[in-house]
Amino acid sequence: MTTVALGSALLSACGDTAAPGSDGTDTVTVGVAGNIFDVPLRVADAQGYFSKRGLKVEFVTVTAATGMPSLQSGSLQFLNSSPTGFLGALAKGTPVVAVGVDGLGNPLGLVVSKDFAQQHGLTAKSPADTVARALEGSTGGSSSANTKAEAEMFLKDNGVDPGEVDWVSLPSPSADKAALDEGRIDWFVTSEPLPLQIQHAGDGVVVANSRTVPEWSSDYAGYGQVVVARKSFAGEHADTVRKFAGAVREGTAYLAKHVNDPSVVPVAKQVMPGVPDSVVQAGIQEVEWPLFVDMDAPTWRRTRAFVDELGALPDGAKITTDDWTNEYVR
Image 1 (cartoon, rainbow, N blue to C red):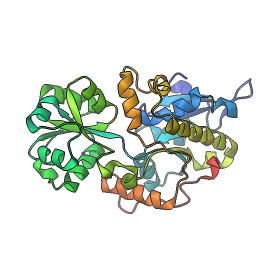
Image 2: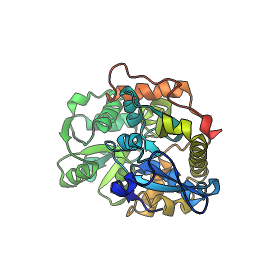
Image 3: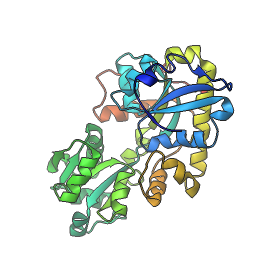
Image 4: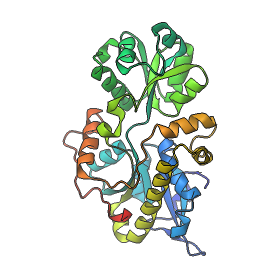
């Protein structure tokens, strides 16, 4: 399926309902961010899990700023959302509901420059506390409040004061990479596969990831990505939501079972074009893909606490059992 840009054509495409096709299928639009968490949806499409349920899916690239408004306007029927975006919408009173989970934890990588790694004797196998101590007094790149907060969690847990790091604010992960290449920063944290891609090119070393940093794992951070719909749409089109959520769940389960299978790489490269196959494969393996997991209140409490620890939620923001459901994946 070709990703389309969000524009006037989309705004008039489906409105508040799925668009019926002449072949008996319904077309639904789903907002995706163009990151690694979109892979289960692409797998579901490639494996025919949508089509066998009578759905045709249009993937629409959105941003953190445009995703929820597009969902609310009816331009999208579904949104593959980060917990931060979903919980932020709930805090504003936006009537949305999580109908499935398609990723756990945070597939982050902390990448240091090649020179910094050599100077401090760091490798991909260095213990977490050794890495953290080496970063004391270093220069770190920061292109988002979330990734900076996640880096600070790692430092504090290993006894290093984040205030001892000289932080350089940058506009994007690609700007982080440029600054690393130019020697203006020693390291940065961002989502995979960029850190692994830098390592693959020989320009840096990934010295921490969600396997070595407990605060980035699902046991600490909870849900990594959720499928969201408007409450009104879910109530009025329960069958469509059930078909969509079921297909995504099946795609996520397929990915969980075939995470080491090279056959998933071509599908994943729809999300990560231009990334080397080996890096795509390694990036997929960094994510905890749930195998038919149901959402539950304790994990949502953990997720909310994690997002709050990032400083990304207004005071008093909460999530209740009215805001998520497993009804559509059973």
